[in-house]
Picture 1 (spheres, rainbow over the protein chains, first blue to last red):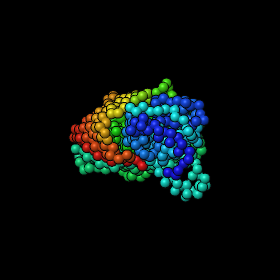
Picture 2 (picture 1 turned 90 degrees about the vertical axis):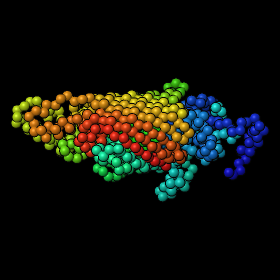
Picture 3 (picture 1 turned 60 degrees about the vertical axis):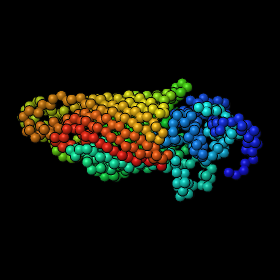
Picture 4 (picture 1 turned 120 degrees about the vertical axis):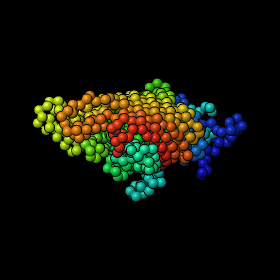
Length: 146
Length: 413
């Protein structure tokens, strides 16, 4: 990934906290900082990411954004949030997609792309690892480790 | 499911989309597909095992790939922020014993608000829980939707419209309402009056209502689907009816005239009232459904159908069990006295064929061996009444019992 000056400073700050973090980074849901959304519950996040709820509590149409790589992040996310394997999530979305009901969440290549999309779209909420989130977005949910 | 971004980029180039399209928030076009490669083997040669009543031939003691194999392709285009178009084509073994691809979905979707969606065009019919995804094996646990519920009614799509509303109901619940209305366009093979013919349902009216509650790991669903028959029987049956009517008039027997009238189903209505319940929270998943069929013609099914299935996930493998049953009400005794015995037997068979009862007990497993592909193996024991329309070419003297072994490979892309 290209060097990005806006990321360096927060990353350095976060590095100081590294010893206090669990072996795997915690997952967070981020939102656009310019919206009234300050907090999401785990239930709300699940309903939005599974396409069951079409609006955020702030009233904006929801645009969930996933992080495609590494796969491990998505895998952990759905296990925590919906108790589902990726195969089950794929089957779930295949049912909705091939019955013309809904599209799966937009998938970005990596955390940086998720952050950019969330920073550019008011209704977007994204999934990233906690240490990747920076000032361009706000954290609205920290997922329980288990 | 990975949508082919490369392919849509190629499509954009091909269509000469402005270069700025790469800055679009999301791709305008999506392509996807699904398929199943299957083999089914049946313990008896006295009847051919089929997946639903649209299949003219099926599996006997020679392994058969026609029952479950299929391939579907889908393309979507986001036309504006609220308008979207979808086209889906599926090739599978169908009523005329070919794999001629059929357009299964072709609609324009309009979503004025995120909660509301209206679709116009050709649409899958959600007469039962998940019945609109019956061709996409990758989306369900079993090898195929239970024949006793999903296989008995030959209407899987309509040309018309539907409307859906999805609402939050409390912290962890969502409610979904759907109404649909349109015309049927499908055909089914019919072995009637001693000949193999095709029943054409084109023009029959289809309508329904669904209410569904999703709360936590539970999903509960109530539904109604109705079919109004506008079309008539094929010539083989109408010839039989006409012959019977003429015979009845000549013999001056009013009871025979009644019998002739009872054979007609044009103008009749078939309704199904369904209740479904699904539970899904790792490692346990289960589904149960009950359907009640009502009709105002003796030739249309009446009775109930249902199934229960459950699976337990062990890593990438999910062993499961299934029990399903359709029980048709027995028909009032038709007055057939004075008819030539061969004609009386044909009429009796025709009427009883539409009153099939059957049950299946199955066990199997699904193995998610790849992120977008699974493999399933299923063994089922079927026990049915005769005559039946739930099997192809049932031979006289068959006891209605069979064991069927199936293996499928499902994939999506």
